[in-house]
Length: 256
Image (tube, rainbow, N blue to C red):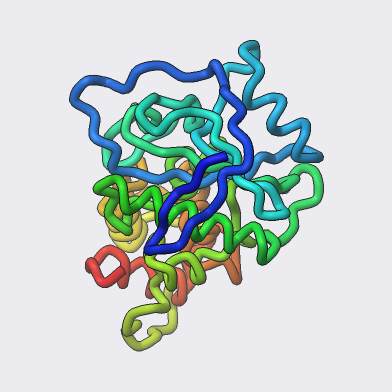
């Protein structure tokens, strides 16, 4: 057993399960990103077994169970294999520059549900300790769906992004002054033109891997859904309505 210090609070890492699924970080890579996942498996035992299975070739640095227990699987100095094919702000080796945290949750495939309070409290403490050790800006606390929007949905719209931001973990547009709501913004797959190009440009400025083409294609819809899962979880439909557009403006203007 060991402890991690987070703002004077100690959290117990009750067990260490050494996963073989890691390698050396690139020599010039600083840890500047925190990526959050859900396990997407029926139970915690199956999830941990997969994360330490050499045949699976996947891992994360930490696993947080629903009862609040924290397992360390990979040393923070090593590159865990958690993000897969992914990109953020043009960088494609997300594993090389990030810490990955898996939260036990069956995910959208097996009965997605809210993350329990004990789990979130343990996550807050763990993430605070990680952020204290690495130069990770708040805007680089991301979901797996942010860095892989066409492949992943985790940790999803039921993750408490607002509460995390209140703890200093990530950003949330509602924490800042939102501009007045303007009616009439409604862009969906099949839309085209300057408004679409503007939205794509703003999503790219935040960090999403998208090219401003002016065509609201399937990739654009995936990226909008990823944005909504993180920043507008009340409505996740891939349509840019006025509220989605307003929150996008807040974040791209640097207020979040």
